[in-house]
Length: 265
Image (cartoon, rainbow, N blue to C red):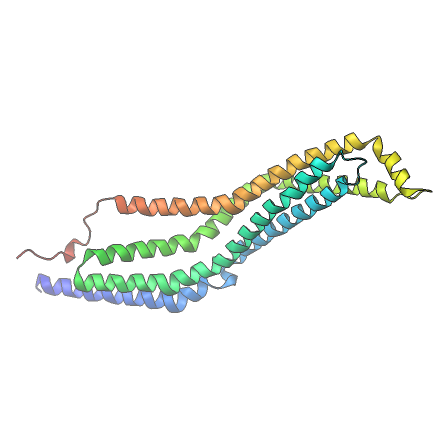
């Protein structure tokens, strides 16, 4: 068998493999990677993070309202700080919902469109032997893997970080609820004049209670920092790491596909 015939057979086999890969990606893998059941664990982790963020936001708002019950304006600065935190919780919440949305969308786009296009470009490369098509096809294939697995991997990393701070965040929530309950319970105590009763009860302990709320503010800041890192920065960091890895791979000088080089005649 001549070398030309061998190369032709190899090209036909590779083209058939590319066609099969494209069809499997379009009709099988696209359905799997766009199905929410496939990401059940990841979605469950995101839902837990969302619930925790909403709990923290509610506790911050309740604490801010409770501080305003302290006599005079001694609690106003702390109340304003707590109220300002709502925008950061909103940012984290939006990031979590965006991750949930992209989780299935990126899988569908990658396996239903990008990978089949990459397979088509590789077939064109096999037929034309123009290396630019192989390079583009490989980049598209790697890019599809990057966007498909960035969120699941980042969520797993975030879970490991959040597990280390889980007890701290729970303590923050409990302290905030306890401090809020202390102030509101004193405010509800009845007497001949409920307001005077409340002021008399609370004035002596105002500085102590305010100090507790200040500590709660510090704990909220720590919780927000953890949430921003896990929900916003880690996904971005994982994405850039994969893109850097792809760039590193393509910076390697490889003389591949030698069996398809045109012979200089």
